[in-house]
Image (tube, rainbow, N blue to C red; front, side, top):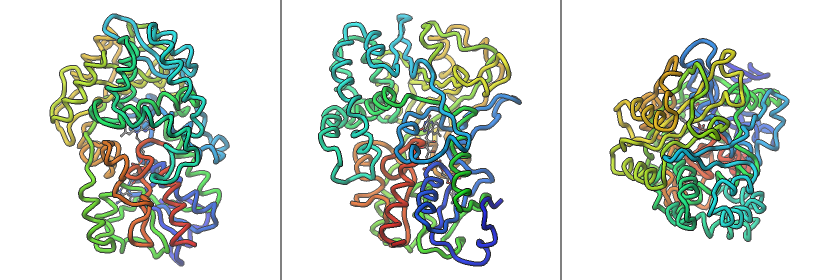
Length: 484
Ligand SMILES: Cc1cc2nc3c(=O)[nH]c(=O)nc-3n(C[C@H](O)[C@H](O)[C@H](O)COP(=O)(O)OP(=O)(O)OC[C@H]3O[C@@H](n4cnc5c(N)ncnc54)[C@H](O)[C@@H]3O)c2cc1C
């Protein structure tokens, strides 16, 4: 299927740029190129646009589930998204009253709110440390965000803000949690940092957790009303309105599959780009991409629910996201187990419950939720029982409210989207070396040694998430070089 105004051009003439992949980064790259007055075609393998931001009725009619991304602290913080009129094309961010809750084995819960003081109040003994350490950085978030959502190795525009952030961010989550005395604050740090899918004693894991907290305090952790697909629908509608074109159902196997263009931006994994380009890229660069490692995978369950989840800790009932995994030690052990190639009996489970704020996701009075746990890359074992056992620990009677479930293993994710190699939803592990050199050591991470070929997926800085910044930076690089 072809979307866009000048459909005839595809068969007659060349484009300035082709973008491969219509996920949030591909569409963002295309928008940046078109608004810089270049002609662009986006080519997508699937019949549907959207990559990791699609919404489908996975369980029953009327229950709309986000297949991949659901919660968007970085989307709401993205300087690129904020520069676009996405609301005019149907995107509405909806914020839960509680951004994220973290139930504890004693029935209490830590929670992240928009307000730093409200968050600190629940942390009892650690409240003042949280207010001081995190509160100071919240004020600096606009400068920090420019850096952490930036193109990678560059002289920062806000060096002081970034340096203050870096004092914590470069360290491990274990170190960061050690700044607090009580179990609730330590667990809160663990749940945030575990989004990195890396053991919590590794460098930069504090940074992932802290970034999500700061983004939450400044921009929230919103859902997109109606589902994450409304983010990519809005991007695609804007793109075609300003003159870009999109062709779906067209898998790119080699460069010969593409029309002529002065620049090609791959918004696919780095490995897909390497496979498609073959010897159009120098062998040294291809070796670096071969050394770029995928991270662990995920196993995900989507539920259609008859009632809200019966959480024991009441603050969880209003939370968009719930980190289920107990204490810092339990979560650290869970992430460590995955790194060793196994799965804990009590895995860290990331739960989202969109119907807390978005009733459009289910028939009246019904609910949806999804959950995933980390697993070794490519693992084929079914994790449904372990995930639901964890749910029962913190929400007794949970299974009684499940009407239907749908599961996706690492292999299902790879089939669904070639970028999720072995179920790695980050398109490249987020350990220290690969945070700094993503996907290879280069000053301009988005530019390959071939002047016509660029990489703009979450295999590049600033990394995974629905924020469009990788695509934006790749487009800017192409505009500076191939498309000058
Ligand atoms: C289970 C899960 C939960 C997640 N939760 C969140 C969340 O809550 N919040 C958040 O911000 N992020 C989340 N993410 C991550 C987020 O979805 C990704 O980081 C984001 O989608 C990456 O965008 P992208 O444009 O780089 O790539 P993708 O969205 O992966 O898009 C790549 C596109 O390229 C296409 N493609 C691949 N190969 C080819 C080819 N050879 N030819 C043509 N087309 C090709 C694919 O079909 C796909 O459409 C989640 C991901 C998963 C899987």
